[in-house]
Image (cartoon, rainbow over all chains, first blue to last red; front, side):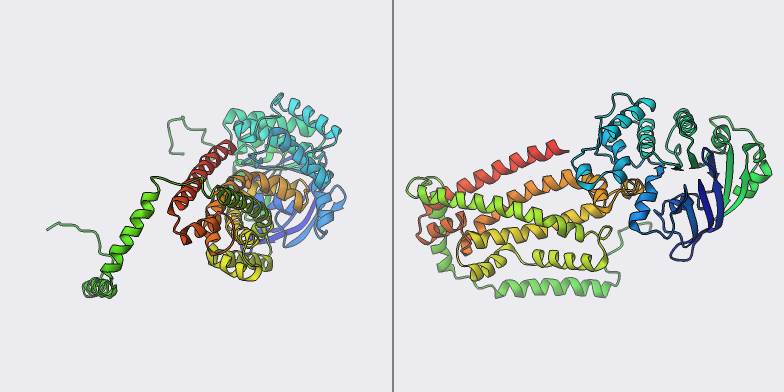
Length: 259
Length: 261
C-alpha cells in the first residue's frame, strides 16, 4: 500500500529531520509511529502527502508515485490519502457538513464546490459517516461550537469521505482527555478495519499505542530504530528510542508531579 | 541610601539636559516666529461668530433643490466607489499577502497599496479633477482608488494572520489552489472583510463631502458654493445633514458588524 524508500528531509538551515527512511505499510495495517519530540514523526507523514517537500527518496501509495509528480498528479494522489490533525484543523467558521464535504474537494470542480453543490452520493456518504462517528444531527453546527472530541470526529469523517487508501494521523489524541482519547483511537481502529485502510498514527502516548495497534515503529533523530509488534517494545527499546528513563516505575499517584 | 528612581530615557546627564534645553529654546523661537494680526483676528472672530450663529437658524429651504441634488450625487459616488474599490481590493489584497502570493506579485501589490495610501484623498482628487474635469466622475475615481489601498492593506494583514493548519488540512484533501482559497482562507477573513467594507462606506461618504470642495462633485461642491456666497444658513443646513447621515451610517454599520461576528 505505502512504500517509502530512502526518504530524507533536510530543512533550510541544515536540520536533518529524516535520514534515509525505508518503510512499508500494507493495506489494512494500523501502524503507530512513536519517538521523542523533534524525531521527525510529523515531518515523515507530511512528506508522504508532500505538505512538506522531501529532499530525497521516493513515496509510493497504492501503486502511484507521489514524489516527483506535477501539481495535477499530486492532487490526484492526495485524494487517496486522508489526513487527521492534532488540533483538528477544522475550518472553524464553516458548518460540520461543509467541513466533512471539504474532504471531497479533490473530486468536485471549483464552481460546484464554491456553490456547495456536492453530488447527492457525497451528501449521503457524509450523513452516513456522521452517524457512524456519533454526530447524528450535528451537520449544521458551526465547527467552533463543538467540543474537542466532537471536532476530532468531524476531522475523521472529513478524512474518510475522501475514500482514502491510506490515513495519515498526526497526534490524534494529544489535545484530548484520556477517556476521549481512547474513544477516538477505538473509532480509528474500527474504521480502518471496516475499510481495510492502511494508517500511520503519530502518537506520544506509548501506552495508548500498545493498547490499539498491531505494529509500532520507533523514530529517533530521523532514523527508524525499532519496528515490531507492541510485545517486542521492551524497556531497553524505549530507552533506545527516548533516552534513559525508569520505564518500570508505575504511574505515580495523581498528586505527585515529580515524574 | 536605598532610594530608587526609574532609569532616565537618556543616560548621559549632559546629553539629557542639553536635549531638554534645546527643545525648550526651539519651542520659544517657534512661538516667537508666529505673527498674529490682532485686527484681522478680531474681524475673523465676528465672521466666525455669524457662521456659528447660523446653526441656530439653518436654512434647508431656499437651496433645497441644490442640497438634495448634492446629497444624491454624493451617495451615488459613495456607493459606486465603495463597490468598485472593494471588489478591486480583493485581488490586490490577496497579492499583497506574503503567505499566498509569489514575491514579484507581492512587491507589485504592496507598491500599489503604498501609492494609494501615501496621498490623501484631497490630493488625488485635485489631480483627477485636472484629468477628468469637474464633477462626480473624478470624485468617484478618487474614492475608489483610496478604497483599494485601505481595504487591500487590511485584507492582506488579515490574510497573513490566518490559521495555516486549516489551509494545510484543505490542501491535504487534494483541493486545488482556488478551492483552498474559498474553503480554508475565505471563511477565516470574510466576516471582518464585510465589516470593514461597511466601515469604508462610512469613510467614503465623509470624504465625498471634502473632495467636493476641490471640484469633485457631490455635496462638497454644494457646500463650497454656499461658502462662496456667504450663505451660512444654507451651509449650516448642509453640515447638519452631513452630521446626521454620518451618525446614522455609523450606527447602522455598527449593528451590521455586530451581527456578522
